[in-house]
Each structure stands twice: as structure tokens, then as C-alpha cells.
Length: 215
Image (cartoon, rainbow, N blue to C red; front, top):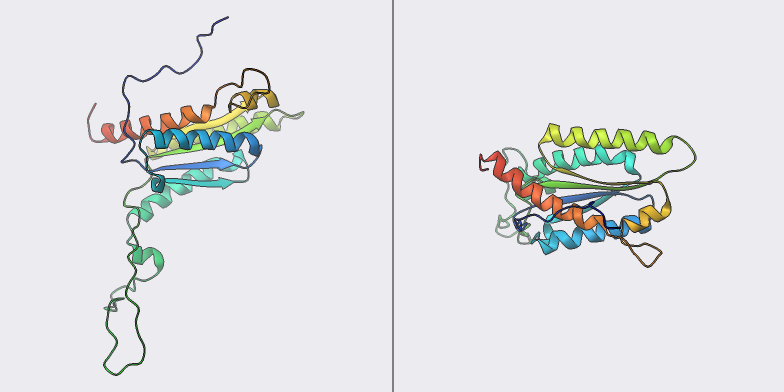
């Protein structure tokens, strides 16, 4: 039987070349996680997001995802507003010391030339939170699903940064595998990480337009 489920293709192919995206993933159920992250990265790159603008980090489990996403969003604003010297601890308030200063005449100490460090000049345009929750024999599953879902939604509304919900809430191992394109049967399923990568580019692009008053 055919199904009406699934994401319809956007009429617009969004250009991600100017976007910076962070992927935060849990480490529980690694086989499925790895496939989902790979799928998301593949679609980000397919839409033009530069590899240098894709940051990937991990946390122990899905319960830690909201805090991690909150901190990387805040940290990316700090990073974008800082110079390379600030971040490397080379800025000393009002000091006139310069890395490029020549040594005093007769000095035996040679000062190496400064190294140019290119730092990101923009905060994250979107964050993808990836986790895999598989129901067990206790209520643990329900508590984590509910709390993480609400926290990630609140985070994107509060910060204005799209947080793509990449947390699978599967009842069985097979359900999780099929949603990562790793099904054990003849139908391998679909890797939902690809959808999340595309969603990050679309929402990151649209939010940039919306905040400038372009609709």
C-alpha cells in the first residue's frame, strides 16, 4: 500500500554556501548515530555548506543535547565577535605589545613572524541535534523523549536559531535502523539525517531572510 507520509520536496533549492552549521549528537546507539550524522553532512555539503563551516561535537546522551545546543549557539556568538588574538589569549588590554615587533638592536632573541589565523566571523545559522532513543522496559524512554523535545523547541524559539529535531524515538531496534537507512530486510529504509541536513540549510537561509524583512 502506498503511503502519504514523507517530506515533500521544496520548490526552492537553497544555497548553503554562506551558512555555518553545528551538529551535536549523542553517543548512545552509535551505529545508527554515525549513519544519521553522515547523512546530514552529505546533504549540507550537497547544498554548498563548506566543510570548514560544519562543526560536529558529541555529548553522552540525548538528555544532554539541549544544554549542548544552547552553549554552542551562545559560544558561536562570542567566537564571531572575537579576534584570533582574543581567542588565543594574545590580546592584553591596552598594551601596545605587538606580535610583529622586531627585537631590540643587539638582542639575541628572535621573534618569529606572526601566524595568520582565520577565525569564523559568523555565529551558527542552524544547529542539528541528533540522538537515538529506543524504548526499553522502563519509563526512562518516555521521560527523555518528552523533556528533550520540549527543551529543543524552547531553545530555538528563545534564541531565534533553528534547532533541527534529529532525535529518533523508536520503539524497536529495527525502527531505528530503518530510519537511518540501515534496515535489516530488503527495504533498507530512509536515512532521516539527509532530511535534517536539508532542513538546516532551508531554515538557516530563511531565517536570514526573515530577520532582514525579506519574505
